[in-house]
Image (cartoon, rainbow, N blue to C red; front, side, top):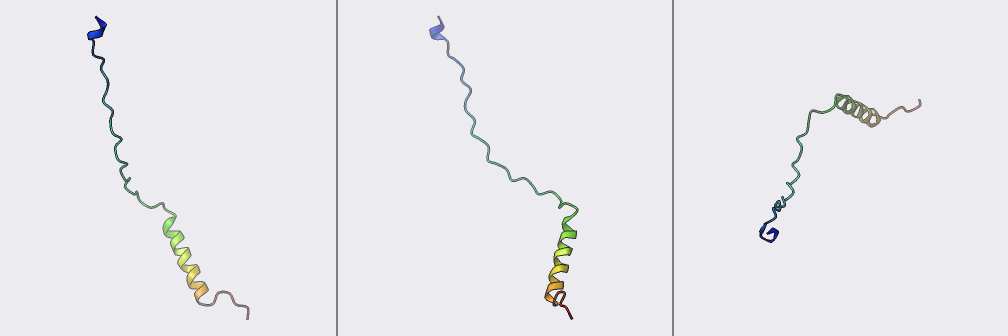
Length: 52
């Protein structure tokens, strides 16, 4: 009798492609870090701290 029973087999799902996560807002320290980098670049372009 058990020979006539069809066993249910769950169909295999294909893995979903990884969705790109939307970027959130920038952390609060990023603008300050950018300003610091710009200030340092300007400082060294103008000659830096040269002894007189």
